[in-house]
Length: 578
Ligand code: FES
Image (tube, rainbow, N blue to C red; front, side):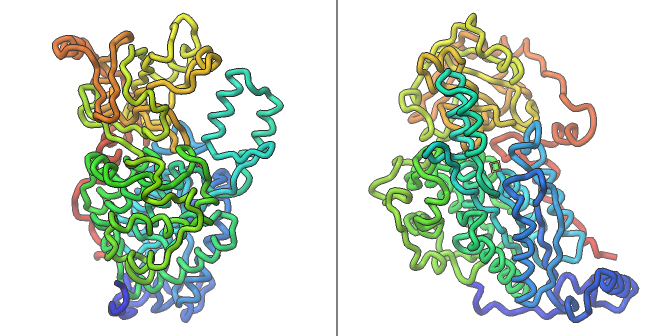
């Protein structure tokens, strides 16, 4: 698709305004570039490539990205570009509180403003830990320069006593075993050493792997990039390749908006669903599409889910980890099994269309990447629910739930916030049974704020000891992509703004029916109206600062949780005007 495109002249590069004109400003910019130690022939007339690096000492998922930035630079230099590295915020899923989701839009803003305000002709984005991928791509989409995404890559598989461990998934599992009295401190100490063995993002099909796979399916990475283990030398080579490609993309002026089309987003949705990927991808892809001027809705997810089977046998829904997926054929092999539902004649950042990228892609292990006639599930991994409890929708990753709970009616037990839930969940006087429906509210976009990943509410200790490992749980929160269970998430509108979740009382009957896509509160409308009349909004959590801006501007889960002022249409002046 890109073959045959003309090349722009050096004077047409965006950076020419900064460096190449006769005025005082260009003189000053050239002088300051000498101050940086560069010869004129090293940068004048060359594409300036910004390498946005989310490396940090505190982010184990990105701790190798300083080295990868060097590899990207090698590619850029080789291709005749001028690389400049920019440190940007790091969003560490593990360490950042209350939740990195609170800061996704901040990194998106930083990305957008940085790319716009500096002499940048093209961008290479380095990230991978959950929110980093959507944040970087949202910001870049709003600027619309030629852009390549370099996924951080999954860490190596975890190991413990001859068992293979998956990030998150096995942490929750063994934590529950400890609470049930099945293992003790000694085993937990060993597990602490074995869960995360190398740099890289979580190596289950959690949010990070889901979003980096979505980026590859969108066409913004070089082929096969998303599953390469972070510490594999192939990851370095992929970074070099990305540096080589971005320079060519700048000369061809192939911008993000030509790649991030409605067709590309449909394919990313199909990919996520067929991977059995994280529910978080629903929010992020809707937000990313919004920045690309593409309207993607919850209904699109549900429609596409009914057309694609789950083919990736990956934890938490399946058996294997990302390294297995990589050696089984990676995303090219996987997508080659979905060609009938994909839009193949669309451009990508690589040489050629998606069709050309997938030509010759093979699957080497049919248990990891299943055949179409042997899927893990007949339908995509996420279902969108409707009903009087979620007029604007809710989602459930039904393939990660115990099947008998997918059609369930039970009495609600309501927790007004996460702290109350933590304090009381193990109190035997609640007398919870496996039939109860746990309800958590005030954990949504405004109420959390930031929709923390509280959605996999803990099973009470005394039920764990009875062998109960799943219950229906409902919240306006999100859930980690490595979590599992019959957890209904992203209930919209959220309870904090008066959504119906705010009106549920302990003892009300709630019906979940995934096949019918139903989430229903079995309380008459007139009773709900009475309750609504008596409802008062909780006080805002932030009186000032970024949190206050967040609470003021954040949109609901069904529309992607972008900031209203970022997602709306509007002109942004050229920073160099005047
Ligand atoms: Fe970074 Fe899981 S903690 S991807």
